[in-house]
Each structure stands twice: as C-alpha cells, then as structure tokens.
Image (cartoon, rainbow, N blue to C red):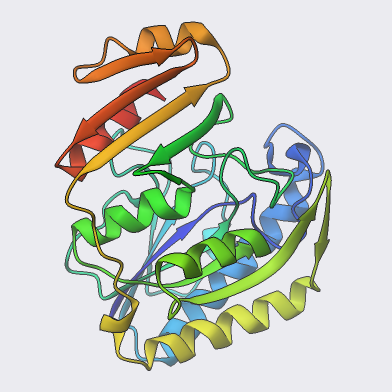
Length: 265
C-alpha cells in the first residue's frame, strides 16, 4: 500500500491561538512537536497495516514544520509548496491507495475553532455548490479527482461532523472542541494513540467505502475581507464580481476551480 498524509497545524491537539502556529513565535515549537507526533502516529499505524510507502505533505503555512527525523524511514516528505494547484495535496496521484488528513480545522465563517479559516485568513468564506467549504472539502474533492479515498481526518469536533456529512464511513478523530476563543482538547498522548489505532483500523476495511463523489458542476463563491481583493480576483478568467467583497466562478472541471484558487487567494 501507498499512503498519503496531508498535515496541517491549526487542528493539532491543543491548538488554540494563532501564536502557536506561527513560526516566529516562541510557543510555536511545542505545537510542532505534537504535529510531528500525530503524523508519526499515522505513519506507524499505516506501516502496521502493511503500507510499503508513506508520503507526508507538510501543508501548514510555509510547509516547513514537521521534524522528519522523527518519522519512519519509509517516508517521503514534501516541504514547501511548488505552486501546483493541488496545494495541500501536492504530488497526489492515482498511484496512492488512501489519504489521511491530520491537524485539519473548521471552515472560514464557522465557530468550530478559534483558528477556523479556509485556505487563507484573508477569506471570509468559500462556498462550493451551496456548501460552506473547509480545507477538508477542497482537498477531498482533489482526492476524488484522482480517485483516491480519504479514510481518516483529525481535527476539531465541528470539522469532524462536517466530514461525516459527505461520507459517514470516514474515520474522524475529534481532538479539539472550539468554544468562542477557547478550546477543549483531549490529552496529546491519547490523541497520538487514537490516531495510530484509527488509521490502522481504517486501512483494514474496504477502501472503496470511503469514496466521496465529485460533483459534475461547480459554482464557487469566494468572499474576501477586503473589497480590493474581490476587485482584483474578478479579473481572473471566468470570475465575476457579485458584491463589493465577493466573486463567483463556475466550471465543469474541478481542476479549473483549484487553478482559480491558486491564483486569486
């Protein structure tokens, strides 16, 4: 088996403040250690289930966070972002058998996490086909584009409920619960244990049951904090400004949507 891991940071166990996910801040290193531990848990669980190769995409901020020296030797590790429209799923293709998303978080405009956002903190919200879009949804559709199932997602409780709306077979692990500006989290060591057990169990099932159907057509609305950003984005081919802060984009091809995201956000 060949397993892909997309790792973010705002949904890592205990994440509660923007300083903790900012490389320039002193408290950042503690959360990096937990992020690394949670990614290692997926690697170890996948290896126990028979994985021969595990790819890790460091998908937070600059893509330079995880301590790869703590990961198993059969890992390939992608740092920084190449500029490819797959973004947090860079290098994913149909050769992979399954995907795990670690440290993910609720979507922009929600109250599931004090660190909720989608793709960038300059975005008020993204709606795809009348559904508020999380980074999970953006990336799950990317996975469907190359026919690879997402089998496990960890992050905050609201995100996990959101994931189950699209496929209630996906293994979800709620490590945080957002309440206003605060979070309630499980013990970090427990999170590592549950993630390891979760991926190992999920990989022993029929992987086809984790499939998420890719829509035939996409209507995407992006609302920005600043009107000038919507004005600028409206010049992207196919985009239309529909309010001072928002644009609309339509396509039958999801790769076109991803390409639009990579240029306007």
